[in-house]
Image 1 (cartoon, rainbow, N blue to C red):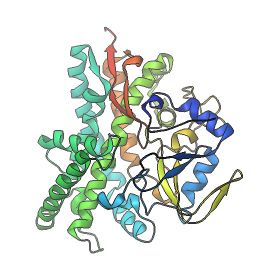
Image 2 (image 1 turned 135 degrees about the vertical axis):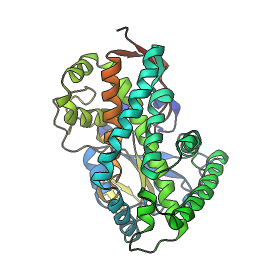
Image 3 (image 1 turned 60 degrees about the vertical axis):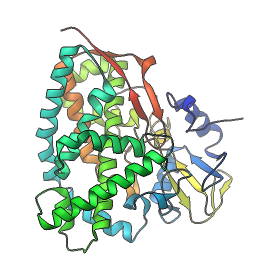
Image 4 (image 1 turned 120 degrees about the vertical axis):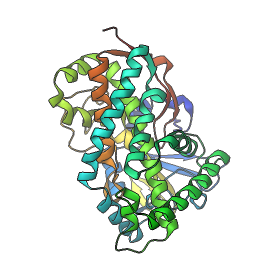
Length: 389
């Protein structure tokens, strides 16, 4: 009998053996929810082909009832994560026009300069925490640059992110308080930007051809605030840990930075910072002789797809020569992450700077503290020892 619960801390450190068993024996897996709030149970899809098909078919696998398991989305500020077309497409078009290639390119000097200053301080100490000292500050500073927010408030922005997305309950009292504080902050900021627009992302969203209310723009701000920080901070921390675990690959990358394009895709695949998001079926769906009834919630496990040996042979290896044409770190289909280019830039630059300044390092693997698996493989602590130079 298979017993896998992605919300049980016992599986946070290494879910991949369980994914392998599920892919092989129960690719459509039903999990009951004790003391449920919205759904009494949910299903999991683990095979790469099924994950890809579900993400490709928004009409059958809808996001309109939320993408977090057993969570009442009426308690969460509305955003396009939890929408289907046509409104999803309208809002996504607005944001895609604002996140331009030139805007992303312009971020790199800011990210690199901040990372270099951070690593110089950490180098002096000789040891640091990959999560709290390195991975968390970089996306927060990047978000401030992208949205023209005061850097002096970065601690508050980070706290809001951790309170809403890094816990076990996305509608806990702490999360709801953070959502309330964010809502007030964003609506006030949006009002200011209407009166005094700049060149930042919020101003550009406000001054599109589509009329948006302050609340709708505040919803964009909330989405950007959460998405810009959460996935990337965990990916950077996971990247530091992975490169410690594979020192030969790390040294190869340090000596040949031309490897970065394929190395980055392989690191993203192996780490899979977003392990899975939920959808709700709009009709009965039969897969592998199992029928998922209409109206049931389905957890689509990106992390399992990225470790499916039918797509990626020897999936637990870090192979910079692997051709990673398709991987599901940023999803697939109409909800493919719009900020993926920003995240890729931040991860590459952060790790590149660390390779330059630190050279070699070790992570005390048994002391890494994982506090969440789904939706994000969230790291609270990852102690790093730098090699003497």
